[in-house]
Image 1 (cartoon, rainbow, N blue to C red):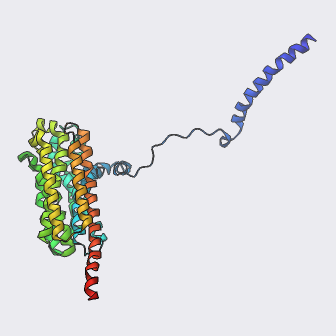
Image 2: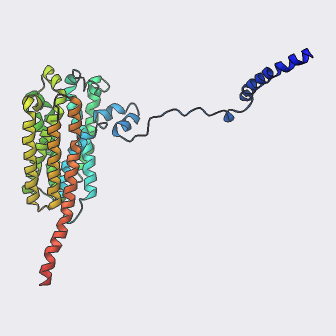
Amino acid sequence: MAALLWRLGRAPCGLRAARTALPAAAAAVWPPRFAAAAPPDPRRPLSFSAAELVRAAPGRLQPYLRLMRLHQPAGTWLLYLPCTWSMALAAPPGALPHWPTLALFGAGAVLMRGAGCTINDMWDRDYDKKVARTASRPLAAGEISTFQSFVFLGGQLSLALCVLLCLNYYSIVLGAASLTLVVSYPLMKRITYWPQLVLGLTFNWGALLGWSAIRGSCDWSVCLPLYLAGVMWTLVYDTIYAHQDKRDDILIGVKSTALHFKEDTKRWLSGFSTAMLVGLCVAGMNCNQTFPYYSAVAAVGAHLAHQIYTLDIDKPEDCWKKFASNRTVGVLLFVGIVLGNLCKRQESKTVQEPLESR
């Protein structure tokens, strides 16, 4: 009897051991598809930003894409937007801008901005090595040789020439005239405290070229004030940009408006912004723009005022944020021009109707 009770008392332990052994045996015998699924690995969300696309490119191609700053498209937008203003102003009353020409100028902006950055890095490769923000650029870091960058520059300029040759003869000559500014701009920081002015003359050439591409030649009563407004805009955003590097610029002997203006920067930026708004109003009056255009100009003024008022010139991250926000300024103005142009047709209809009823 005692032996029987002892065996019964041991039975649960045996059952527990069997229950423990069964899953292990089953895992060894059953195919892996019946095993418990492992928790999914956390993955980075899918992104289509320019920086992500450059990182996803083949490794040997990445240094060239970074050399032309495809991972930082803010500069491309700032080069492209004055072209869009001019083309939208040149459109016939009541019509949208010519989309194929907009696309053509978009391709040209990518190529010419890339060529300009390549020229800049070729001139500044020794300076870039001494500045923390630019030391990782492909030429400064030794990822690309000077000869390779020169060949790459030739390819970019050749493609840009193909874009230019799609335009009329007047525009071809006008576009070719900008090359002197493109090549000489990187040298200006060694000569003058106003390299941002030369950049403005270069970056806003599209305000002239866009109009001539649509109309066949420039109407200087519209194009010149628009061009000067763009130059003033560049002085605003690139002075803000230059404040990021002012400590390094002092050490290596590079000049900029940020170093020239110092603590008076906000006063100068306010003056440039006012001049920009005046130029936009003159351009609008000379091509009979309507209420949406002037509303957009007012919104641009408010945006610039907010930028300047909240700017902290001693915080590089804030300077970059303000600089990059200028894409919004350009887009606001483009939308205002398009809407203003569409209203021209409505106004002309209201004028014609009373005349026809007489």
